[in-house]
Image (cartoon, rainbow, N blue to C red):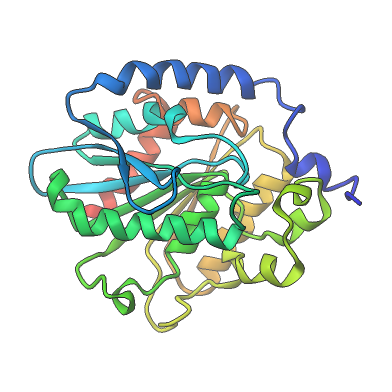
Length: 287
């Protein structure tokens, strides 16, 4: 049974006045980008049909920005979000748009594993796209924000990715504590139990799980000022947890934006949100 307090904080389907219009516009803009001369479409990084990604290539030695879309692990596709990657490509980055499998075909742990596989694939092929595996920035929206935050806790060198380094993580409107979702209708689709929800909540891992003495990459948590208290609190609490563990963590509240219109702002190179994202990225890669 859903908690009547938590339900409207997290279950936005049917409650948003902007969702459909935003995604419709982004899909239209993304469709127009599919003939971009620097774009490689639908590269396979794994064996299942949705383990695909798109790459805006550069010449040589460019930093890499990886974007992971949201949708509560149960909806949406990468084809909506090329429009968010294009401004990053225009700024000189190898910009990569990741898709992954969804519920109910895959469990949440399996979906997370797919995104980790995508990041490994990207690092292994970065040079082919004109990028540097040792200059990677991760960015994701909503459930994608959860997964890039999770990826930051991984000791990639222990997995054989010695040449890869994540220089910064930007979760946008992310979910870092999955346990509240257990008491919402969203879990009818996710089918999480309490142990899995806790085990896959980045807020409980403010250090690398295999190398707790090694700092996490700097993090910029972005969230819309008009989002529900649930999403605002998720970013605030995660930011606090990271800082308390001694990591570099910042939070940016985008005034006037909700859970969906913030995606429009990310796709707009003239927006304050994009400017804040770029300032963070440039500060990390210039270290």
